[in-house]
Amino acid sequence: MKNLVRVVGIIFLGTILLTGCNSKKEEAAEKKSTDKVLSCSNIEEQTGMKNKIDMTVEFKNDTAYKMNMDMTVDLDDSYQSYMEQIETSLKEQFSKFEEQGIQVNTKIKENQILVNIHTNFEKLTKEEKESLGFSNSDNSYKAVKKSIQDVGYTCK
Image (cartoon, rainbow, N blue to C red; front, side, top):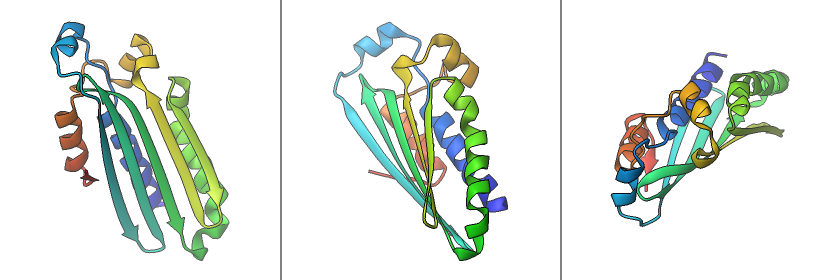
């Protein structure tokens, strides 16, 4: 269960680091309008568990506007009897995000728990962004990439 808490923490931190919206529209208009995509991944292995997270962040005018995170938790047979409990725990952890416009899907597939988190920052209301603490974050390509790499992800 400690591993599960760590996985949830990593996902939560990744979501927080990648979300937000630049509140200065004039500044965004001045930035280069080249669209970019940042792809990052992280793999952690612990006894009986392997966590693989693939994250894609899309940028417009050097500001993150979409994020997709796919997490695959491979569990050995000793966790088989806990699969539904772990999935339920993950759903509970992410339910607050769903209430605020972030799509979260979980699924069990054999000895895997699959989690997908999708956010379109442009569709979140100002209140939703503020309640999640994302309204004044620096969401430039450079800042997001550094934040993700600082927590152990490899980006390309």
